[in-house]
Length: 271
Ligand code: PGA
Image (spheres, protein in one colour):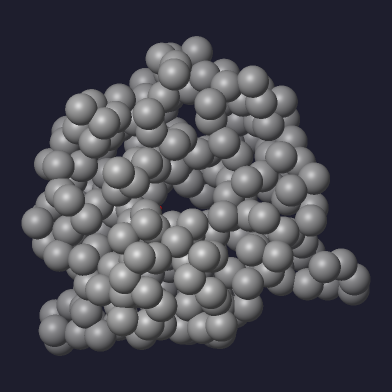
């Protein structure tokens, strides 16, 4: 059985005090031992403080992004070694918001401005390799825009993103990684992808990995669904065979809601 994995992506939320309060709330409400791998991904300035709070719990720490170089003149960037030095075990790579692919683009966010979020398939691959070099488990996000879905391009877009992310990796690495299927139109919109359809695309991801790497690696690696996962829709999603957990934004900002998601995943996946 694959260990289910629920990760909270706090995005650009929480000052230091708020992050400490949220992490403390999660640790206090979770009933251990956990059968689900739980990960919280606070913003960079809060990583160390959150690590102090979760260090003796079963909750792991993840970052939301990183640069791939070891160190040097890269103003504003954060290296893999910096992440491990503050206790990170996971790193989200290629979130659609880091690829500049937003479901709803706010007024004033022109194409030029969106380029500030510079990830693409090539940077995702190079970051995944850098993560492995530093024993960080990458959570690689893939997913289609609404316009791509409407043109029937969902599977092709997702497959291309998966193939690009896997370039140059060996089967042992791939077996340990996590993919998150996050349809961009479902992120932060409250419009969750229907469970059977989410499962179908997660299967497309697994098949892509099977064809490019190995069937064994494809069966071992975990695939999360992300996009408006909430306490009232989590059960249907977790009941799907190819969905191994969730990458959760909004609902991870309330300790009670997040713990409800973790408990639901455990109940359904671990029996
Ligand atoms: P959401 O975000 O749960 O707020 O839709 C999910 C994500 O972007 O990881």
